[in-house]
Image 1 (tube, rainbow, N blue to C red):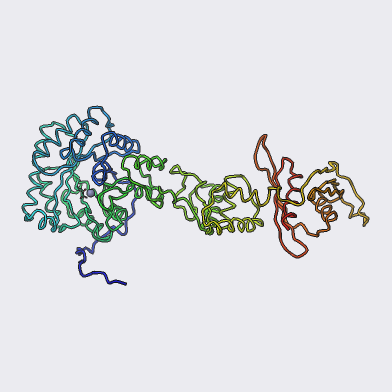
Image 2 (cartoon, helix red, strand yellow):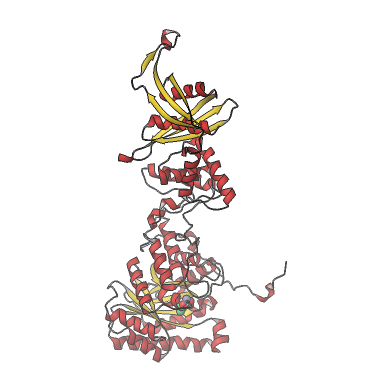
Length: 565
Ligand code: KIV
Ligand code: ZN
């Protein structure tokens, strides 16, 4: 093993904050969601979205229920400027949706930003400048005061341009960019300076967006910073605290969740966590985490596949198969014990009166996000009999009885062990048919069979009480081209058939289990019978038969097992 150069890195400076209260809080309501797909998400794409793709994404975000959508950086690119103009001129922005545009704090950029917003109903101008120690010292070579002056100057210009635009519905969001790398008291100082100029009130609040531009520590540390800021910012009731977590350590969702517990009211993020480097906070995951706790996410996820489709189409990005709530495999169980538990959980849920979801291994009902039950259980060599039985029942209406499931499970396992591949439900059904129903390889085949419909009373030559209602069967069996026929009585057709078969062939066995049910309804109605027999050598053999007539299905089931001896 090679030693890694750990000395190259230093610990993140954790603030001393003992009065935290967020660990005792829970989230009870969805935050204000702001999608940054069209800005932060888009700027991270190797091929950014074109105008039509942006339009498609915007309309889709609106249809999902987003009320705040960041459109882009209109002063930085012609496409982004044109996009904002098109939305306004073509009246594509619903009255209850606020669009947000990002800008740096320079006059010509701010003027162009306001130009792009002409005629907008509701907008947020999102002003940002970097405040972190590293950016101040390495990138800008500016003092704390000089960096603060950028924010102050920018706010003054936004105020002036807003007055000129005569649009009271233009709000200000200020981001001390690289907040996680900024001394917390300095970040607050800068925000206070911005606030002093903007003069928000309870009706016209200012938004302070506190980004984890780079995720630098565990989510609890971010939450501490948010709570500290929330406790110390002046005129708290005139402020909306927004969080914008990037995913460099893979914990952006947790960071945003804990930040909401710590007092954040607005959450910025992107679908599937698209964004710079390891991405932005994934809104789908955070919102559906709320949903799974019985909290209205206030966004529509009823067709998660559609969300995935629009996302992949517009961004040319892939969704990993194990992406929470949306990945191809997330409602699939391969392991036998998981399949069995899901199978039982589903049945229990179907019967429950309160309809509270409590299915093991599935945090939410796949149906709620437009996914189907059929895709839940897939079969490979890790699967058990329960999963196989579930597929047969759900996909083909074949309810293999419990006592027969291990036999069929073994047959499937033999195939998956050999092929080392996943089996589709059709392939599983084929194994069932070939193993139990397909008569082509049978030595003994049912050729003709007549059952005396009227049961006759037969003296079994014992005491009077032993006289029983008996049924008579007349059967012809084809044995490799030769006919074997028998007439036999029994206390039912199956019993009579078994006795006759034993007598005619000389092969002894006893019937151990029997079960039957209808397979399909209506004109195509068929019956299926399942049988297990025990040979004179003590071996259990299983069979199944299917026919329009349930009695014939039973005889076929006996022959199915008999041929497998
Ligand atoms: O990650 C970030 O800090 C940003 C800002 C522009 C808010 O995207
Ligand atoms: Zn960002």
